[in-house]
Image (cartoon, rainbow, N blue to C red; front, top):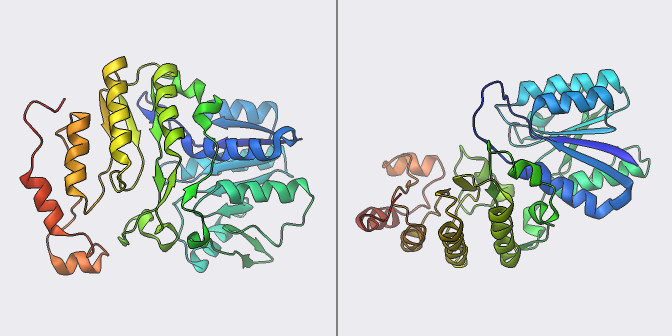
Length: 336
C-alpha cells in the first residue's frame, strides 16, 4: 500500500472563508475507487495539519493544487517531504503554469524537487501515474497530461479534450463522505461543479485554453443528490458556490436552480448562491435569477470596444444578450 497526501492549501493565519477542497477530493475519490486497498489517501486544506502528518509519517506521493495564492506554500511542503522521505514522489497540478512546452519545461527546471506536473484535468492522469508507480514503472513513458524532465528533456503528451465523452463519469466525493469534515467547518464554503469546459476562447482566462473548449456535464441525478447531501451534512454555510464557467449554458440548469431554491426554502440556507452566468443565454439567466430570488447578477463584460473584444477572444459574446439582460431587470423585492 502506498501513502498519498493531497493538498489544496491556503494561508490561514487570518480567519476567513475558504472553499472545500473539491478539486483534490475528486482526485482522491477517483483513485480510491480505482485502486481500493492499494492506496491510503488523505486530503488537506490547512498547512498545520499537513505539516503534522508529514512529520509523523511522510507520504510516498505528495500531490498539491497550484494557484497563484499557494504556490510558495506548496514548495515549502515539497522541500519538507523530500527532506523526510527522499524517495517520495512530488506532483503538482492546476492553472498556475504556462501551458506551452517551453513554459512547462521552464517551470520544472526552476523547481527541481518537483517530479511531475499534471495539466488540465487531474483525475485520470493522476490515477494513471499512481498505477505506474504501483507497477514499478520507470515513469519515462508518462500518462497523457503528465509532464516531467528526464536528463533535461521534457516528456509530455497534452490532453485532447475532444476525445473525452460528453458525460463526466466521476464518483462523488460528497456522497462518499470524504468531504464531511470540511462541511462541518464553518469557514469552508461548499463548492459544486455541474459541468466542465467553456466554448469561449478569452485569451486571459484559464477556461479559454483550447483543452477546455468542449463543455461536458456531470450526472444530473448525482448533482441533485449532492445538493441534498450538503444541505443535510453541512453547518448551514450561508453561501454556496457553483464553479462552472457558464452556469445556465444548459437547459437543465433551470432544474438545478429549482432544486437549490427548494433547499433554500426548506433549510433556510444557503442565503446566497454565487455563480457565473453563461454568455449568450440572457433569457435563461434572468429565469435562473428569478428562481433563486437574486437580483444582484453580475454581467460578464470587460470592454464595449468591438476591436478590444475581438483581440481578447470575446468577439463571440453577443451584445444583444447583454442588452437584453440589462433591459429585463429582475422583479423588485426578489433579491436578498
